[in-house]
Image (cartoon, rainbow, N blue to C red; front, side, top):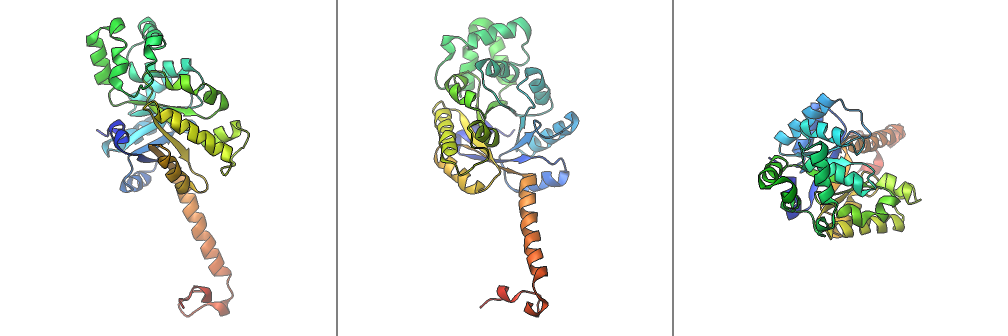
Length: 296
C-alpha cells in the first residue's frame, strides 16, 4: 500500500497532474519515481470506469492516486473513493460546513443520515478545535462518546489509507482559512494558483509579490497546524517556485502535468528544428549543423 501520509510526514513528496488516460503515459509516469499523481476530474472529462482503472493501476504501482472531484459534493466523493482514489481534493472550498461534509464522506464512511449528522455536529463543536489535527486517531477519539469504541476502531481501520485535501483558491477562503484548517479530519491544502490569482486581482501574474505573499501565508498557516500543503503549479519558473515553496515549508510538490510537459518539450523541439530549417544552405556544415552550432 502506498502510504502518502507517512511519506509526507518524513519529507516533501512529489507528484504531477495526469490528464492522459493512455497506458503509455502510465508507464512514463511510473518510471519518473513519483510519490503520487493528481488526477483532475474538475476540468478534464473522465468516465468513471476509466478513472477507476487509473486509480487502481497507480495504486498497484505504489503511486498514490489523488483525485480532484468536480465539486465538493459528498456523494460524488464516495463514488471516487469506491473507484480506488486514495485521496480527494475538493475544489473551491470556502466554508467550514463544506469541509465537515467532506470529512464525513472521506473519513466516516459508511455513516450516513442522522448518525452522520450527529457526528459532524460533534466535530463542529469547541472540543474539536484542537489546533493540530493531522493525527487520524484524534478524529475518532472525539467521536467515541457518540459511536462507541468498536465503531470508531472500525471506521479508523476502514478509512486509514484515505486523505482529504481542499483547494484554497479565493479571497473568501483566505479570510476563513483558520476555521477551515481547524476541522478535524482534514489532511491538507492544494493551492489553486490560477483561480487564486484571479480572486486576488492579479490574474496569472505569477511574478506578483502579493500573489507569492499569499501562497507563503497559506503554507505557513497550514503547516503550523500539522497539515500538508502544496501549490499545483504548471507555469513559468515552475521548478524555481516549487523549490522556494518547499524552503518555506510546503511538503507537497504538485508539479506541472503530463500535457503541459509534453507541450513544453514539443514546442521547444519544433522551435529548434524550425530555426535549423530556416538557416541559409550556405551556412550549414557538412554534417548538417548550422555554423553557429560548431564547437570552437
